[in-house]
Length: 77
Picture 1 (tube, rainbow, N blue to C red):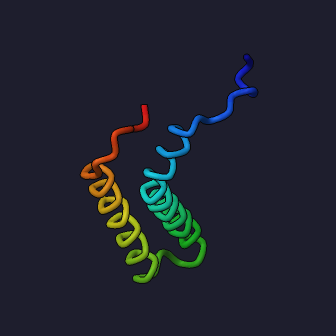
Picture 2 (cartoon, helix red, strand yellow):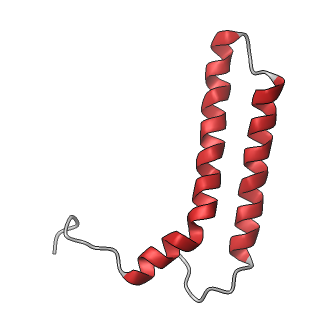
Picture 3 (spheres, rainbow, N blue to C red):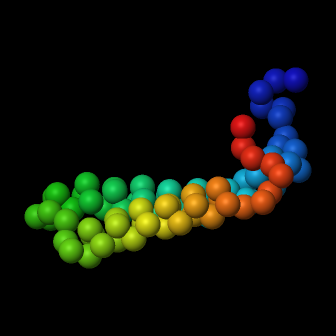
């Protein structure tokens, strides 16, 4: 079997479903950070840009906490 023939198992898909809120929150942080980088071209980040970043970081913290306290029997390796 080559690395391209691999199909995720039901367990793999369940782990992704379980961890998706954290993944989505981390993508929100990345998006906010990219916005901050581009803000330099328009005179610097605004108060709204900073707020967006702080809120995205808070979502990551909450999602990680929720994931850590879940009672699921499987975890990503």
